Length: 312
Image 1 (cartoon, rainbow, N blue to C red):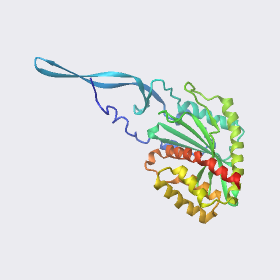
Image 2: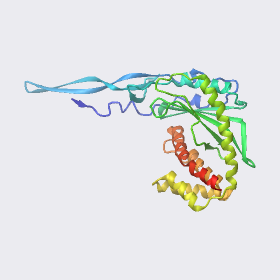
Image 3: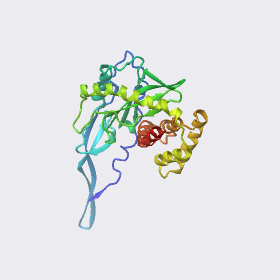
Image 4: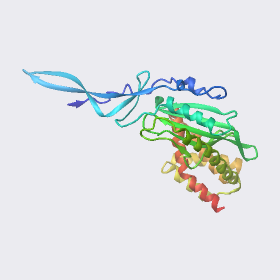
């Protein structure tokens, strides 16, 4: 029995972008998010084609059969495109079921939603979704004429890359850098969780404002904390690893921020968030997921910045 390679390769090519309407949905006022803003997905069994060859009276006959793969299944969208191949125990959490519930929790949390915006982005052909909310009513100035807004990102995936979760951060308005905060502030997930726990979501959203304002107070100190070349190099080495290209990129960006802000912790921090938000994307179709991956890398080096702040 021979397995035919790449039997699903054509089906796993990136599907056409069918989410333009969602991507332009940024004005939340007067427009509630509903399940209709998201595609529905379902799972289907996988099969592999096999070849059975046998000899009869000196003639080789060949017949093709299909055999089900019991260890995996396909996640399929409403147009029949395969978004991902997952293990048989994988439980799909529908965007259409859980993200509108999360948005309702935002309104119940007591956060000031005046002017709140919503941005829905998809990547990997719809297998990963990032919904970003910004809150201009919770604007804070780190230094004169350098404001930022509270930002909350909600993540979900259909390929096992992300569990349903939300992240608190900020958007620096001067350069649109996504400011990264050290820890995930909330998470609502589990192998068998298909709906949001409203009370848990509301309570953690209330905590998000405190997390944001606490970090903003640290950021206000950053412009007054000098950094030396050794400290900068150590941070960049930890972020870039063995990538000389990334290391050089970070030094070049830092030089620009240093010219503008001085050799301080705020310039160093914004170098990191500039890279995570704006560095060139090899695959623009997957930009939303790439930013999240980069921010996770930035999150890992934030303790080094905190040590510099505490030592100052």
